[in-house]
Figure 1 (spheres, rainbow, N blue to C red):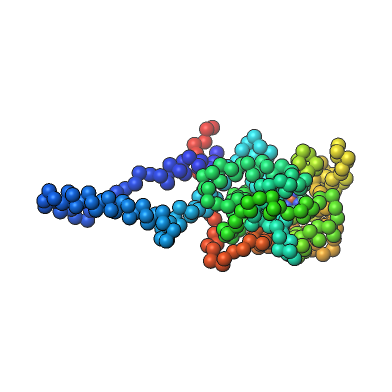
Figure 2: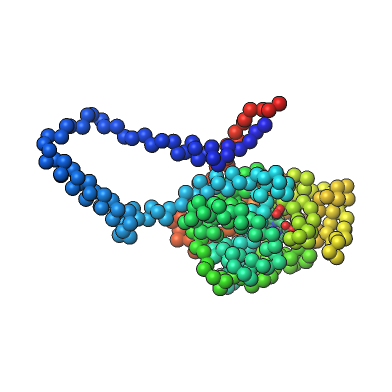
Length: 349
Ligand code: HEM
């Protein structure tokens, strides 16, 4: 059985006892007793100077305490994804949805919204219908925020989305820090900025054009529905988009292009599409409208045939999505995180 190395084991490996730097030669013996006083004085002075160095804002060293180990944050997120008691066994999909809903509120004309302020922490945005169920994802990340208090929520949520995509088999997505958190509900965006799944392709176009995306980018981004499922108590829809909802691949495009779709009435009065031969697999009304649109269709067909092209286009579009409206200074390090190693343990059989 293959399994991940746990956070505990990773931590144990990193915090091995410090090895003291040895003298290159023996230190000279003290010559006289009066040197003891000099030693005590110098030690006290050294300690005070060190304290001042670490705490004074005039020294670069003072910034050290605000640094964030983003590679460690990635590992910590990757370590908490798997949970056999949750949905299909992974929190990855709901973390991708959190990153997308935090970012997809951007309005290119007014330059408001986006992941910068992490405004979904506040009401009313936390209560917007489109964000139903995302408390699960926000709460899940709280222990990581507590462990890395200097990371902003906007950085944490977008990094978690990147980690989830990569750890579930998706492409490496460049990511950089730089989001600062809003401090009140004033940063909330108005309701209605995220797509409504009951509407048609024109609505989807308007929503994504408002963020600054074109048709090809819209279709590429929607391929994230390879992951996860709809929940009756969140969106009102029900079921996954494929039989493998914890694997990031171009499966979504194959499924939508190759299956026969029939309408299914839902208990709440709504409806959705389901695969005639496996009614557990579903599509949203908006998605089949998109698929039937001539301009969108060519990208659905392209990505169904060519996973490499999908991965390339998805990488660019998702990185762009998570950076909408973020006031980068320009000198931020761009991270390309490595996926966690899979550790093979003893096979119990
Ligand atoms: C065409 C526009 C889109 C519509 C109408 C739409 C709608 C939805 C709906 C209704 C759900 C189900 C929520 C639930 O009941 O839990 C959902 C889930 C999801 N969406 Fe989208 N979405 C769209 C675009 C996107 C984009 C651009 C991404 C990411 C790049 C994305 C990622 C996800 C993921 C990963 C889930 C699964 C969440 C889970 O399993 O908990 N979606 N979406």
